Length: 337
Image (tube, rainbow, N blue to C red; front, side, top):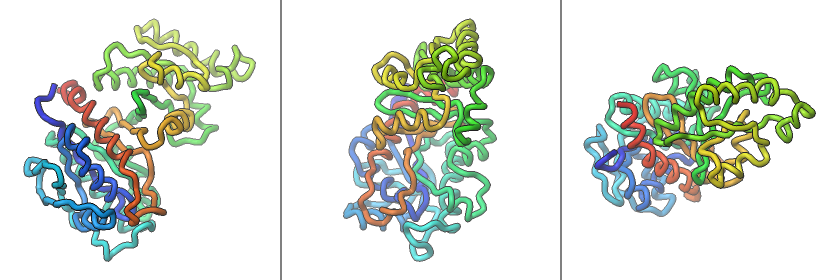
């Protein structure tokens, strides 16, 4: 385990969104400085504007590498890419300019992570429309990082109040997601989920598989996926030595996990798990991307263009993303060696 605080990079996100503001606010909080040494990859001009609009005092310290950081309360270390002059864009609006800048912050952060200089990346929000306007060939953080690291199909895990949720599918239609509920895909996802949990320091994990249909299909009365695909997958996984159970109806499985019955839940489609976690605590739901060569956590909200530049954005999700990264970094780094 670490004899020091984890070192975490925070790419600034879309300059026109709330990323700069929540990054500054989070790094000025004592609870983050107590558990991690953090620095921002971004543009000091945007960050300074965000501090001023939020009525905050911060000493911005420009660095060229993480080793140059001065990690004390009130000091915000910045690797300044100098690529987002506030005079060149409008806060709260989609633009190719900001899409390109946000990509460059991620690209630089990934480069630093791949060099082994840091222990984790905690990301602020970017805007999909701005990325598209800038002709960036990726739709979001996960896809960008997968592309930059040549990682095949990274695995998303949500964590909130100790409850962990994995996803069988992500950004596909609801109709398509039902087609992806296959025995083979469930087995593969569970195996990768267990590997991810063990890498994060979860010993002897136990996972529940959510049902797809109401009441888990009632033995075929409301759908056959549980009988034909999910149950056979669970049986095979148990024979392989994985501690899995289910299928458990989606209206109860998350409650059971929250109360400690399971270490994690496999959600069978995007919104099934998103609704459960975000309804429980929207601000403290954190996304953890597994399968990358480094640990990555993220806020689980967007750029909030409607409140950008007003100094009113809540940093709670950003703080939580840093705390989760700091919690898992020692295990992740140790298990990667």
